[in-house]
View (cartoon, rainbow, N blue to C red):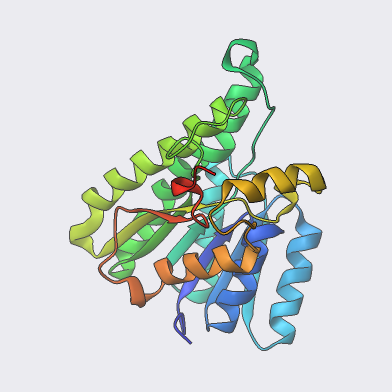
Length: 250
């Protein structure tokens, strides 16, 4: 169990990649603090993990709120005595519209959920990792804004690209303290955010060299690697888990 005894925060844990990560990390021995807006779904996942012999607690809230980021860290330290890492995974796409037609509310919301939430997370998680003698942070970014620009996704691209820049700075600032920081860039993944339109899914599959979308478990496994000691010399990266999306032109 490669996370045995480690305490990990997961945001966006109520569905999709975050829910998959919760189950996988628990099987790998982690003590989990789960965060998302929907308390009922978080409770269900915690009950499932506990029923299988794992340890998981949750606090529901909004990742745009700095006090919520602080609450998750305090819960980790109060319940499990420390923090070893976090999978900062919460996100949203926002309205699909051009920058010229986008309203300020959508821009601010998308950056708040995808980027400013990462600032709040790091602000409170880094001191906890410092007290613990090190650890690992992972931020879910995207190939959008990194290897490709998709029309209508300007706010999302800006936010996800911003996470990569922040990741690099955090890695440089805190590497001497044995704190590793990485961004994970999934390809198209079968999550509620991707919807259930079969025509849209067919288009997305074509973006990838593997000609399919990822299962949430596949992205969660990549996050597992980055949070575990198996990636002990990996920091400051924008690690693609994109099924060849970034190199595919057909």
